[in-house]
Amino acid sequence: MKNLSEFPELLETEEIMDLFEISRAAAYRLMRKKGFPAFKIMRRYVVQKKALTKWLDRQEQQAYRYK
Image (cartoon, rainbow, N blue to C red; front, side, top):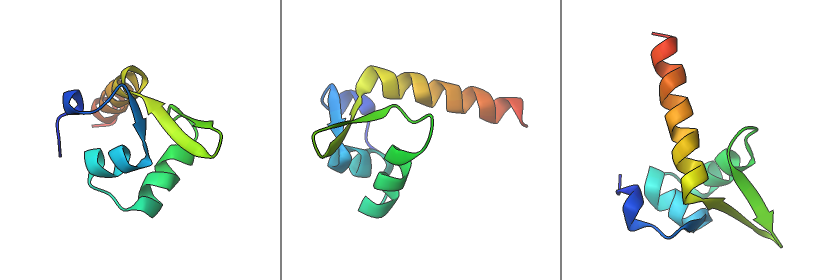
C-alpha cells in the first residue's frame, strides 16, 4: 500500500484503487458505501484526502473497540 502523502488532495477512483490495492469494482463499492467520504462531481467520484484520513482513523478506532 502506498503512503497517503504521495497522493493529491482530491483522490479519484484510480487513486483509491492504487492506495488500497483493490479493483475498480471494489473501489466503486467503497465509494458508494454509506459513511465513506466520497462525493460526485459530475460523473466522477472524488474524496478529499483529509476526509479520507479522518474516515480511516474512525475505522481504526472501531476495529480496536470490537477486539
